Image 1 (spheres, each protein chain N blue to C red):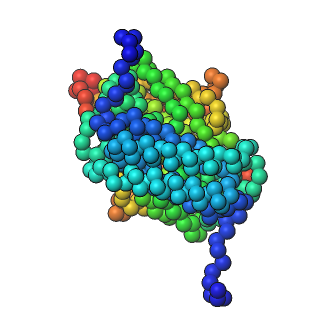
Image 2: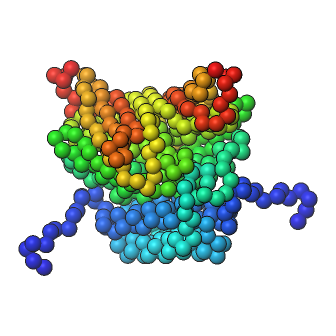
Image 3: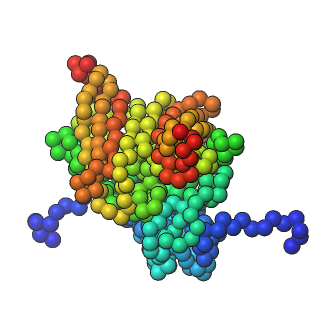
Length: 220
Length: 220
């Protein structure tokens, strides 16, 4: 070991084995990806189901009860924002969370309050032929706009979300993401965003979010 | 075997083993559910990851290429609607599809053109504390409204989707779903829907969908 070696990344999710849990989520994501395209014979399917059931039985005894949120497992552990790291403060997010196998290959980067990012969505997120499901696009936007708010100290609940689908958003293509806060009116935060392919917008969203904390009357 | 015994349900998805593939998807869904709440020790996590990876390696050789859609695996197999059975015509849907482990415990029933249904969403669909993620609500609505259109012979692409979040939609609670076509203007179909808990609306949606087939000029 040398001084140059970086310290292992520890997000502080208070899991017994953080990296090991991320790894099981990644394996599960790969399983979902393979299953979406598979037309397998009975023997392979029966063996696969038995292996998966055995994995599940190893995890079930370690269930943590309580009220979960995408930033926390149950009633214990830290909540919330480590600014500029959406995947760290939403680790169980169903679209960006490394601990949730529902999530996709998505990255958000927040610089000077503006979020850019990328996503690559496989066939499990498919709707119309070769295209990302409209509802998955909405899920991606809700998280993108919400993370932009959190990173600007304006986190809150989604009040309304409006999406306009302008062109096909293809699966298995690199998507470019952008989001920024348009304006704040009292406790309402108006946040917008786009998804593009090769620089051409395929979908755009506007959300009105209701701030739950950090609301300052002087912002009225 | 007697004459009273019902014939096994065959949806006609042209998979080598339809019921076996549904079963692997169900096992994977149970794994996701267990993982979302798990704080497991390293030994269990390592063993679980190895089992899952082995299951994946059994499926990967049986990959079908081509352009998938939520109604079809690749370029072969039937497309589309068997009216009143949304889970049959969207079997790979990421929210209602029995062949997609991303999907949840959701049922749609279409009677006289109006859709009712129910859903129960576990912690893997979680956003704010104890609540369903706003983007998952949007995904559920997009499919609910879209299925209503298909069952009315008005299937098409989502043009815009607007959601209003009025009260908390809780995870691990029974949700009631409703959707109906409000009106048709040329190729535009205006479809609305609600999610309720104990009869009280928690979220409502309006979508404008663009018909891609079955458009009749006399509907103008």
